[in-house]
Every structure is written in C-alpha cells, then in structure tokens.
Image (cartoon, rainbow, N blue to C red; front, top):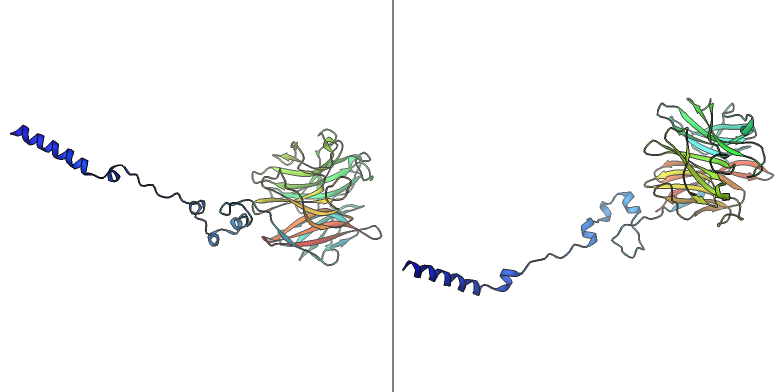
Length: 339
C-alpha cells in the first residue's frame, strides 16, 4: 500500500510538470537596453556650464558629448594702451590692478592700470640691458612662486639685429619680491646647446597643476619657424620637450580657460605662415597638441600678444603694433566667450 502511494505521487508530479506552459518555465525576461542618453542621465538643464560647452550641435551622434571649440566675440579697444613701447605682458596685482610689463630701447619697463585700458608708466627700469647675450632684453613673462616672490623669464639677444642668423637669442630669468626690483639669475634656456639653432626667444611661462613650469617660446629647431616648449620641476633647469607645439606661428601667450589651454600667437611673415598676418588662437586639452589656428583679427605689423583673463567669460589680448611713422605701441582687443 505504501509503495502504491509513492507511485501515485510520482505520476502526479509528472502530470503537473507536463501541464506547465513552456513559456512559464523557460522564458527569460530581458529589459530593453537603455539608450546612451538614459545611461548618461543627460538633462541639459542639469549640466554644468562646462558640460554644455562640449555638447556638439552638429554631431552625428547627438547624445554623445564631444569637445567643442570655444568661440569668442572680439571687439577692438579704442586707442592705444601705451606708446613708445611694445611687447607687452599683463600681470594682475594683489590689489586687483594690472601691471603691464613692456619693452623699449631702455630695457623692460612697466605701467599700471585700474581698468586694463588706461595705463600710467612707472618710474625706473625693471630689467636693464647688459653685456654678452643681454645686449638687448625684452619679452617678459612672469610666474608666481610659492614663497610669494615672482620670477620673470625674458629674452636676451646678442645684438640689436632682428632675425635668426643675425643675432643669438637665449632665455634668462630674474627674481623679485615686489615686481619692480628684479635680481638677474642667469640663463634658463641656452639656444646654442639646447637644439634651438641659436634662437630661443619670446618666452611665455605657465605653472602646471603639478607645480612644474612650462615655457613656450619661439624656436628655430630643425630650421623650422614655430613655437616649441621646455619644462622644469624647479623653474630653473629646463628640459626641451620633443616636437613643435605650433608650426609657422610665433610669439606665444597661453591661458587656461575651463578645460582648455588657449594659446594666442602671431602670424608675422606670410613666407612661413599658412594664414594671413594677424593674431590667432589655438586650443589644446594637454598643452602639447594644439588645434588649427582660429582668427582673432587680421592686420599687418601686429605681434607679441599677451592674454589677460578678466573673468570667466572675458579675456583681453594686448599686443605690440608698429604705428606710422615706425612708432611702437601697445593696443588691445577684448573677447567675450559666446559659445
């Protein structure tokens, strides 16, 4: 009797299994894949301003963020910032005023302004010419140091003749605690031993997030006409970085805007440059590989831009210009980021 009950139970189980729907026993429910937009939780109104800047309006994959160039609206500032001087470098003082370092036959001088447009020349000479490779000094650029001092890098030239082959250009440095009185420190980039063919000129220095200093400068390396770079962990001993940062343009000036390095440069000789004479900017995500040049404005006899970040959406470009009859001056354009 017991065996019969067991057999009956087995038959009942087999019967119930056979009655169960195949869809109930074997079907796996798969949820539809989320779109890329849903996975990103992409809601434009919740994106930061930085994120909005990199969403492409013409991308073939509209839900995918891509790097997008910054676009500026440029306006020329009326008049000149300075006369009887050029090759500017703009520096923001602790009190918010702006000091413009510039050059003339006396050496490197300075002027100060409250609004960045009207400047008053300061007494004295910041860097005077010397002997040897400092018969002419010009092209100042400054980085702040951790101890509150500042270091100026500048070009020293062996003669007053302007071009490669006629003069040797090297990059020097000087240190100051007040921005007015500088003590020379010596050569930082020796163009005769550094592979620059005797021409390391027009430096522009930045401090990187890791504390290293990178100098962008005009080089004749490889008999090219362009912008190279060198890097240093202490601001004194520089190692030349491989390659050319920008070909055919000169006179670098760099600023970090949002997630981009923006390098301004001049086209001064159409025998070399692929673009007409004027001032241009190029973009980079790493400070080494730059985009094609984008026009700020086209004009003859302009050179040596310096960039001042006024606020998060405004920059001012100071630059040298030769005014008739052969009078050097500093002029400027103001740019607003529109996209």
